[in-house]
View 1 (cartoon, rainbow, N blue to C red):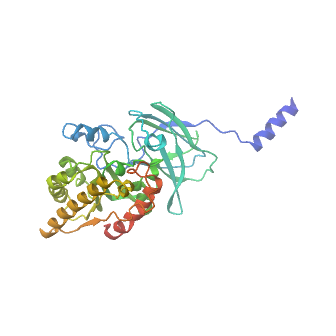
View 2 (cartoon, rainbow, N blue to C red):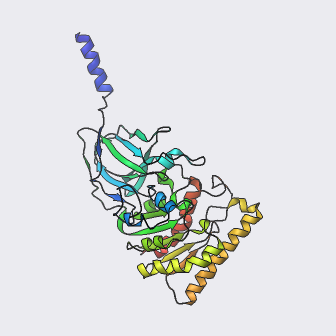
View 3 (cartoon, helix red, strand yellow):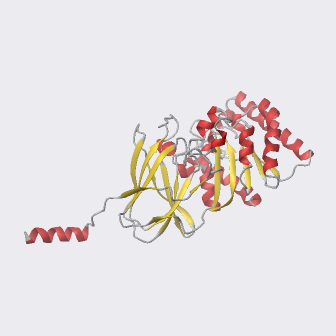
Length: 357
């Protein structure tokens, strides 16, 4: 008996027992990346006032949590998650981790560093995952990115039973005057392999500034109610990246009015218009090549008309070099891979750096 106790004691010294995680809801932790706090539930993007005014497709996509993130600090040795999805959406060109999982980042030397992902379970609304274990017990600042293409109904964070879980001590990323981004499925994050690899999230880390992701897959069609929303929160910069979802007719019909609604709400904020990407398939598909060229020409025509009418603080971001020239940055000829998103973030960086207020 003594020998058995000695062996158990020695094993305990060499192989510390990992305590079971204690899960708790996180309503007390600050949530960022929202244009408005007046949403139907906590984990969604559009204010409740738009429910009966927005197009149904846009409203439904507002339930996706793209761009949302929680900030917290903890001295736990392990971090786990339990979450319930809104719809358990399945897609054939995007990882489930990107669509329905979470990403955890930690602050080291004033930079955000990837820790690990919480991967969703197969074909399940309810999920549980341990993101990281075996950390030391120093107090650390964390940032938790939400799923890009699904919603979150419930979220709990698991930590050691005696550990601290509390709001962050540092206002990083800086949350005053965010960069507000409007756009398409690419803007929403399709098809990043994990939430932290969407270009909006990458840029938010690089600038240590809050970004708001108003990407609506297939539905960035210059809706006027969204234009009012874009200007409803004081922003340091507004990026309009809607071109893949519109045609020449829609640009000519709606863009100037859409811009003026935004400008009325944000009279002094710099606004960037982003050209339609030059899709790899356009090198072979002549119709696609012509369509993209015609749309970009229409964008420039509206832009120059605005300038001629005296509009200021507006600029166009050209598509040339946006995702490189080797045709290797998309998953399907349109939507970006992680490589594409990293290249796009680098493409946008100097424009944001120049005009960020």
